[in-house]
Length: 412
Image (cartoon, rainbow, N blue to C red; front, side, top):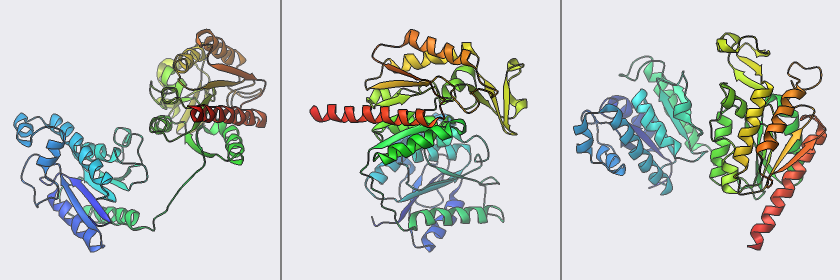
């Protein structure tokens, strides 16, 4: 199939009129369309390029069996699996250069499942009735663009037409733009950063770039940590500078920016060299102050802004973070060094600041060492995390591990 083909994925039984409208727009812009039907209820308004029967079969189930079950939730699950399989195959054959879909809860679930199997950088746009709420279940760690539909996708009208037209123009722009060919022969390093560790990560990044590395920085907001873990699993990095493990505090204490229970696992499983630091473990993240659970009343809070409230972790909580860190890193197959800044782990955790607590950092260190395997090296530096000396030490230590790992691989 020729280049510049857009996949249109959706339910042609309930949204057929709208997909026909979008298809005509796309083709008027000079692109080809490839329509994938994931509807179940009634007959499609027009013939797709990929039938719903083919989608069901891609999930190892016949369409007749699926229809006979009369279970909407099960049907959505099966069609999501089939759509993901179909879209991945189309992408790998070079048959599509982008994907657009729109719908409500079922359509969004099916389409975004398919989009998530496509690589970062591949144009993906989802117009959804759910786009103004919590989109984490749909986006995951991918780069899906979501546009709020404002109204339900139920016919063409004076509100839906301009929104769908904008969506068509947006995805066509993504596909038709001049292609950017990016090739990086430098070793690539993943790093984690938060606002309160920015000086450290910025200095370490510059130091590594001077040494000939490319550094990709992830914002440690839960989704950032999950995205980094996924890309490590995919083999994207030669080293990890995990200077900001604040997501562990949210996971253990109950904040809103947790990256989940599998944080700190991918590097160890893949044998990727890593430097790990307790950056910003002094804080747990919440929304506005009135959103903080009442059982935390009386704790040490910092109002970062009207939408973000930070809560100081206690020595007991920091000890749990230390145990959690040790348990994850003990199973690492690659080299690991834990680098600890003894004068504070964030901009708020230093002399004169509201979160400064040597007792909490001491509890973390004791708990960490209590559970840590002798194979994991610990370096304690009499410095604050945002000191230039600490940042340069972190970059130097990581380079040592990366070079050593490369020499060991070359010797095999």
